[in-house]
Image: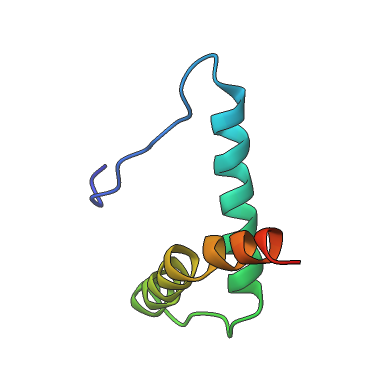
Length: 70
């Protein structure tokens, strides 16, 4: 918290929410593994911001289009 980070946990008795969180982290880690190792926290944040943009603007749409349009 001293660094401005707020811990978030899944809701109690909601295991599906926890699974979604774990799947998101798995996707993020796979994305980062394919990038050069960040030299510092600023560079890491830039990589995570790029992932967030891709994830929020491209990921779900592609999955929906593939399922809807065989």
